[in-house]
Image (cartoon, rainbow, N blue to C red; front, side, top):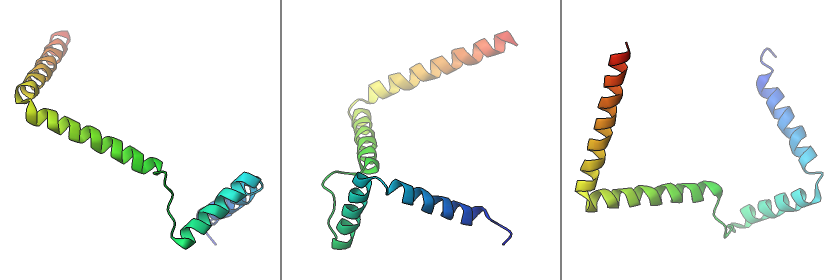
Length: 96
């Protein structure tokens, strides 16, 4: 076999998983998770990814609402950004 990378990863993961299962709490957690997957039960606690996606969507919706309800605030922020960018560009041109 020429490429030993993938088999090495699989062997390492298997050994790492076996070592992790030495801990009684880990074995119990894995056993419970497998049982829940087999029986179709879902955890009441949202996953960290789901929680992060929910948080990002909340802030996205909040910003969109602010933009819709305050067009003059949005315009002021854009003008402020443009002014800062112009000042930065002028400083860079002056130092060259």
